[in-house]
Image (cartoon, rainbow, N blue to C red; front, top):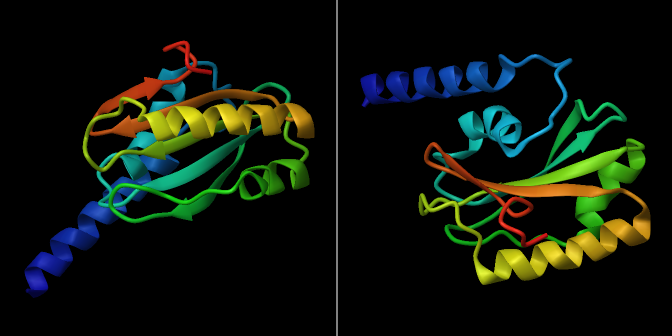
Length: 149
């Protein structure tokens, strides 16, 4: 049991280091950039997590906000929670990111409906929503690239 705990801790440290080993000055311009930043922490989680990438005017990651951590197949998110930190940080834009514990990054119907509602909210609050990226087991799906946003 002690050895299993040690191995688990080492893997978690590696995951955290991989997530932190990024070029903070590099702009986030594509779904691949989003996956590179978020996949090390999200792709193998047993539950869904929903994050907001708060971007500055040059689209550099200003802050990663964990909005919610859910159950096995869903994560309850309200638009006010998504945009609260973005407004407080004076975000130039945001990118939504969440994981699918199932391993399939393709957006569900619920994901599409929810993202479209958030896009409307983004327009109202004046913070552009650039994309919604779903990561899962070394793969990622962009709602923008799929024409769903």
